[in-house]
Image 1 (spheres, rainbow, N blue to C red):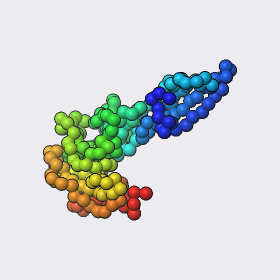
Image 2 (spheres, rainbow, N blue to C red):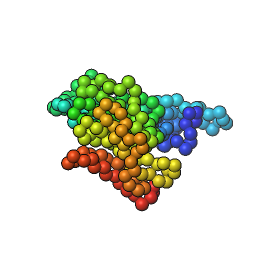
Image 3 (cartoon, helix red, strand yellow):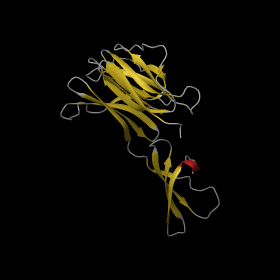
Image 4 (cartoon, helix red, strand yellow):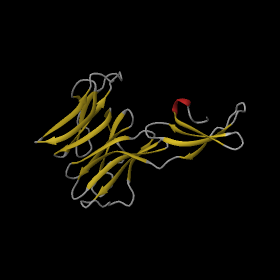
Length: 232
């Protein structure tokens, strides 16, 4: 089928029609949560066959939420996927659970924008996410306005988490330096003014690490992660 690799076809269901042709419907898995529905008419004729037509390109899938408590409000961040387009979105919420923004605030959009996380340092939020290979971040005021004109490059890595201690933030994540068979927990500090304070990330432990999480406890940062014996 045009536009769908056989390897990416998730399900195929055939329904016979009166004229000895078949209407074939299938889901095309084009990436994480990017599943669309197609249909094609097939018969016993020789190629070329019907190349298929989209039936449903789906509403956005909203995934990977994280929430931060601010001053009299909360900030919910999450990723949104729709037919190959990924966005990082934010929604401010009042203490009663009501939304403060008519539409979600768009933090980033593109073919790769995953796993957002946020923290509040008493005056601003830091929102971090990964682009498939790197972790980037952006500061936001309590009124929903950006404090940085563009995202800040933090470090190579995936699946960030953020915690605040005083005015500074800690961004933790996982990183595969040169071989994807090995993945390490790493972290870098970011000032309240948006300056990356560490020239190099701090490697916190050994491979194989997943799900790095950061918190501020007792005047110190705490980072936890899951460590597996191998990538399997």
